[in-house]
Image (cartoon, rainbow, N blue to C red; front, side, top):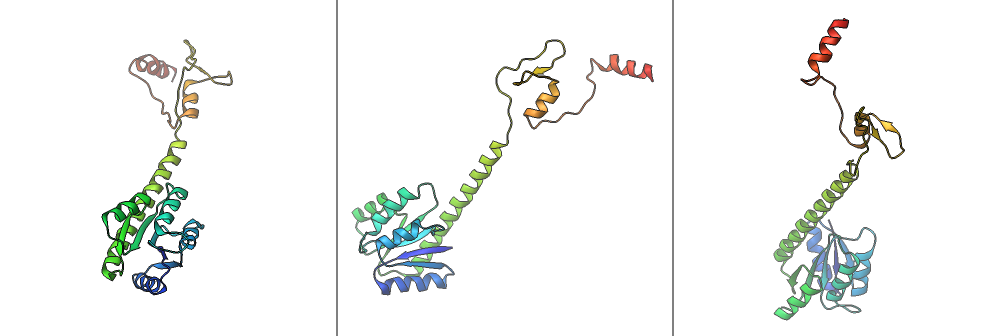
Length: 200
């Protein structure tokens, strides 16, 4: 999984990058808010980001707000890296679209654990989105019969939208996924089976 790391402090940025690469992640770097926003808006952008709260050009919380609006409905997990730990700051970050927080200076084990949580959430969201797409595709192939169907009271043929009379089974096969097998019902069997045997 690819992760975007945005921090104007090069020492912190490199330290986070090094730890993530040790964990097997591909890391994209950004040194300020606008660069982070551009990276998250680019084609094939990462679905997981670690953003420093205080950055030049645009704070991490503002990046959260903008990217949530721009990528609405797309899997995206955002962790704010911050030295702010007051309740009001946590509420603000969550309101702007952050999913989680890591305190600065970060603890390597905490970083690993929180990133793993983010990865699981993103993978679940991607899996759910794929299942929804599969279901939507299946629904587009489902054929249904609706409305009033004109049917002959004697021969039971159905009049189509093109004003052509078709046999009932032909119409149903054409408009549903049903298939027919032929047999004799108990009422018809004595009459038609005996007639068939008499001819043979």
